[in-house]
Length: 435
Ligand SMILES: [Fe+2]
Ligand SMILES: [Fe+2]
Image 1 (spheres, protein in one colour):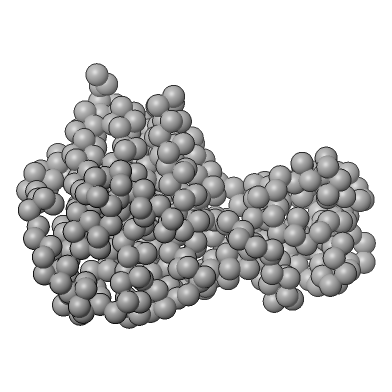
Image 2 (cartoon, protein in one colour; image 1 turned 90 degrees about the horizontal axis):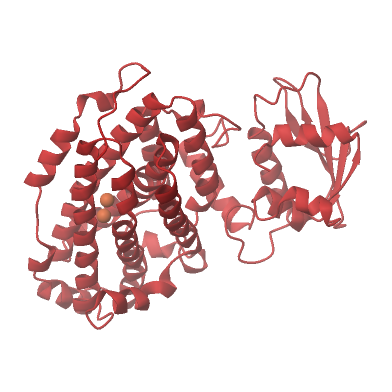
C-alpha cells in the first residue's frame, strides 16, 4: 500500500486547506440514502398526466445524459483509487465509487419505472438511451474512458491531476452540477416528480462532496509537482473544453428543450464556466495562470464566453462538426477574433510578424493577423508585406482551428500551401502552439 506523501512545495494557503479528507469521509457516512427505496408511483402518474408530450421529450433527453454519465463515472473511478497517493484519499474515492453506483441505480429505476425505458436491467436501459447522447457528451465521456486506461499505466501526480480535472472539475463541477441545479429548480418550482426530486437533491449533495474532494486532491497534487501538474491540467482542458458547448446541445439546437423549463442555455453555460474557473482557482491553479495560450479567449465575460462557445459550435468551427462550417462574414470575423485572443502571450517573437490567409474559396475574403506585443490584431484584407501567406480552403482552416485537421498533415498533403519566409511557419507554431 502507498504511504502518505507530504507536500513538498507551498503555493500559499488555499481554501482546500480548511477541509480534511477525514471530514469528507465522515460527511459521506452521515449522508447515506437509499435509491432502491424511493417510491416512484406518484412520479409515474405525473409524468403521464401532468407533463406535456414535449416536456417529456425534453426532460428525457436531459435525464439520459445523467443516466449514462453516472454509469460511466462509476465504471471509471477504480484507477483513481489505485493512483491516489494517500490512504485517506483512496478511502474517500472508494466511497465516491459507491455513490456513483447508487446514482446510476437511481436513474435506471426512474428510466424504467417512470419513463418505461429498458427491461429493468442496467444494460437494457443504457442501450436504449444511447442514441440520445449529444456529440459533445460522447467526446468528453470517451476521453474519460481513455483517461482511465492512461491512469492505469501512469500513476504520476501530473497524470492523476489531469484525470481529476476531467472527472471532478469538468464533468462533475462544470457539467453535472449546473445541470442538477437546473433540474432541481424547475421541479421545485413546479412541485413535480417528488421521488425523483428527492433523489436528485441527494445526488447534488453527494456531488458537492465529490467536487470538494477533487479540488482538494488537485491542490495537493499541484504542491507535489508544481511544474508538471499545471502543464497536465492545461493540456487536458485544452483537449476537452472545445466540446463543452455541445454537451447540453439540444437536438437541432432547439433551445426550447431548456427554455420550456424556464431556464436558458446561457444560464446553465455561465454557471458551468464559473464553477470550473472557481474550482481551479480554489485548487491553486487559476485558469489564467496555466501555461500555454489562453484556455478561454481573454477579455470576455462568462456570458460572452458561453454565447461565443455556442456560436462557434453551431457554426461548425469548434467541437464536433455536423455539417459544412458556416461561411458568412460574421462567422469568419468571429473566428479570427477568437484566434487573435488566443495568441500565446509567451510566443517570444522579437519583432512583429504578419500572417495572411488567402482562401481558395472565391467568396471568403483574405484576412491577416499581425502579432505584435501589445497590439496583436486580425484585419480583413491584404497586408502590405506579410511574412507568411497561407493558401487553403476555408473548410480546412476551420478544421485546423477546431483541431480536427493537423496543420502539418495539411501541409504534407498540399491542402495548406505556405508561402514566404520558412522561418515564419515556425513562428506561426509558436503563436498557436496547440496547432
Ligand atoms: Fe454521480
Ligand atoms: Fe460524483
